[in-house]
Picture 1 (cartoon, rainbow, N blue to C red):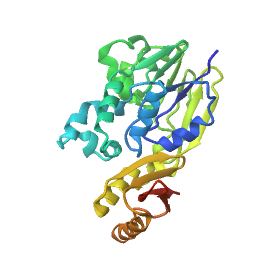
Picture 2 (cartoon, rainbow, N blue to C red):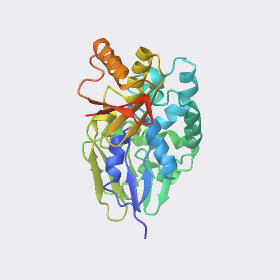
Picture 3 (cartoon, rainbow, N blue to C red):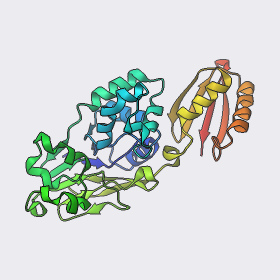
Picture 4 (cartoon, rainbow, N blue to C red):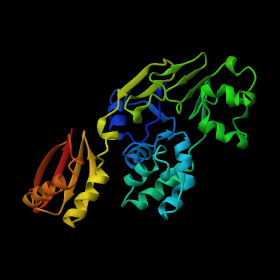
Length: 298
């Protein structure tokens, strides 16, 4: 029987996700518990990986925010997804800069993500939805599946189903951040605050084995590939293309290595914090001496 592993809230932490996947059996079915986007630097890359791998992702409250506010954000209109820094929409918008057709494709995919998966006895949701299991298909309870927490008993306990603590099922969910995977009688909370610098966690159904990976600094660094590309383009007046490599940020620019070196010196003078703590390696393209590659690593 095929192994199934559920991964907690990734929040744009692509490097951490890729490291975690090396610990998970390659043949495993991967399910993501929602909140793929926002806060971390690489939402676009995370979602593209999920789509290309044909993995299942639960709809999270941050996907819901994105779907609700994306049009306002694209038009530069006020919206809480981008305007409220704690939500993290700015980082998501930055990751899609110059890739609007990709954004449209991702939004279509995201809009079809399920609110839950029922793999008896496993009830896989984004938020703590155990007290709503019997009403899981009632539209009016959709919001609870996106935002409810175990600790919300005092505020929302009046709406919880009587006897949910004794349900003979296991709710696997993210959303509610804890330092370690939270284990209850019939639930596991697997959001361990990856985007806050802690770790990304996953759980194997059946054995309940945990897989964990500490947050990769590049995922939450104030220096992101889109930001570096934007500054390089502005100073050089030359288009810059970037992609994520194994443990590194790779940039391609139509300048000779010598000219690129001069551009980087100007960038360091103008914005010394941007490249602080990063190792820079300039590579010449043998096929085209006027095209350089810049590799940034920790």
